[in-house]
Image (cartoon, rainbow, N blue to C red; front, side):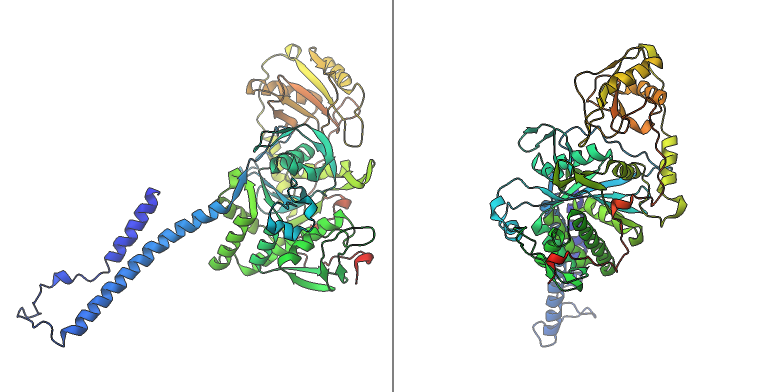
Length: 551
């Protein structure tokens, strides 16, 4: 037991003891006049009863004070014990970079929220339908990045459809030690390849955005959270019934009449899992965004953060429902995250879905719409607000200022004496690598004085963005100088244990030409047209229902 707790409990007991009547202060048999007092007479009985009552009350008070202190401590430990934790990342995340602090020293916060389809418990199996998948590794059916701006004045929620085909990096299962080699597959299988840490790495590999934490929630967790909140308000344009059809073997079972409803229990899970009745995964992501926005508005109306009873109910449900990355695995840290989310006004929260297009290899899957997706990733990297409600003095100005303030190191050797390896990483999920691309850029480097530059001929890689990597601090200045010679931004200069010397990785953003293609600075709210943006303050929108699923 902590010393502070012992001191606290001791002080509580001493405080209670101080309330106990001190009967010894009056000598036995003495009255106020100093004469002898008869004992056992009728006048003394009420006095004795009052004294016994006072002693009893003080004893009860001492027990209550001590018990309350102990119960509070034990309840806090109970909540901490509810929380399940795991490793933040299950492999090398050097392809992502942290956004530089703004002028006030603040940095953005990125949290990956993962909805698991696990059926590995009786509760989840009952809610999840098919028993055929009982015992299977869980899949990440819902994946959403929550981005809090550095100044905590705006937030974004970005979804990637579960059937998006992406490059998945090498991952290691922290529980078993099993290694999973890199592959190209749909993104929802990442959770089965080493847990949430692998899903995080895949997001970082795709977006270049450093992700601070992850949280996962399963079927039963969704139901517990909805019930603890008291239901979440949703709206549909037409009567909806997501039932099996001749073409589709299963459905969520969601059945609602047109209009606004407060959904609880299993119905909340059905809303989040419905896909066919909304039309596709893009529309399912929109329904999920509408649900979460409504949930945040509900919590604000309930003033849950100052209502102790409601907060305890929610804390109990949340700690039982969530599994989190280990660095946020305490009640206090989760509470602090909640308070930061609470500080963002509803009209500064924007929910979007990654721009995508049909997969040319499989019509049932999608792939990133690269130009538009890259624009969105750049906005996240630069901490540019997704909404226009913050005016011109928002995160963009801070992010730009931070870039200009990045410390420049002196090179350790002259350009002609520096060994540089150039790698071709122009391959993507939909395009083959550009032939001899590393050799072409190597010749450019030689022309700029880097005469010891060599092309890596071991094979092509796949990276969305060009990067300059270095293994140790003494080579940081050399890597920065190389980037400057090619016009590559300093944000692309990264320390990595994956390289043994200064290494230029030519990514898919530089497939042609010998001059690095500069990118225009994105403006706040300048989102791609196919991002399906939803504002957090929107209370009037209703989900349209695909005609086959109306009743």
